[in-house]
Image 1 (cartoon, helix red, strand yellow):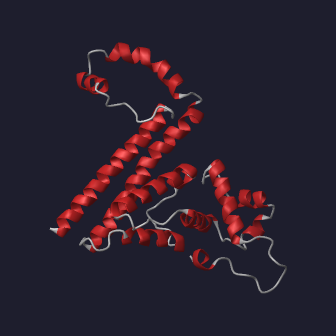
Image 2 (spheres, rainbow, N blue to C red):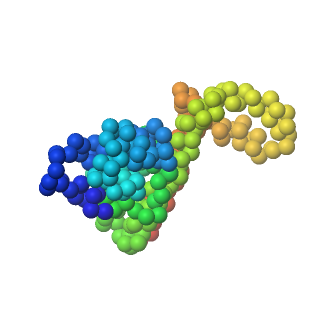
Image 3 (cartoon, helix red, strand yellow):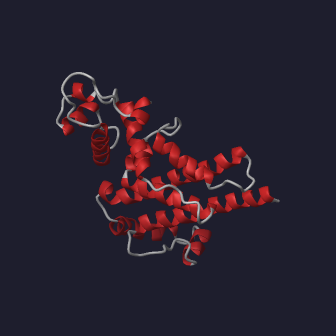
Length: 244
């Protein structure tokens, strides 16, 4: 964990090191963006950097430590939640920033969160999020729970957005092509069998807010926004109850 806080130690003897830790982390992030964390290896990273694996281990002891450094570096590139517009806008901004980060680095969704990365950037950002709820009378455990609820919701909803974004490449077919293959049979088999679903569809339940993006992606983004409002409404109700 010292690497997260202090960086790689500078050797007192021997030739000057060719790389610095920041360059190694950036290269690892780029490799993960291309191939995912499972394909990232110390050997492949060393090759990408033009050094031998043994040299890479003088900077980073292993892949587990490397992943922590990558997560913390990405957290450091994200904006801190702003408190000047109030708790709701601050938490909304936190979620929007996290969603954008997951879309830019989808492999983050594959990194386990049960054990927190205790890096300075991760903790600084989390501390700023907790500060959004200062002074509202919430119990300490509720402050942490509310922020965690937003973070957990965002991570879950982001997976649907990322899946929708990747679907055309993974399936080798656009939304229109996918639907054209299924619509005739569905129309035939569903006719008259699902009255509630049909009524909701006719009332606009499955409409999307913008037609410039592929339907599946826009639907995932709309559902993210809707669900986030529900989570924030719940936090607002908890704050109101605490004040009463």
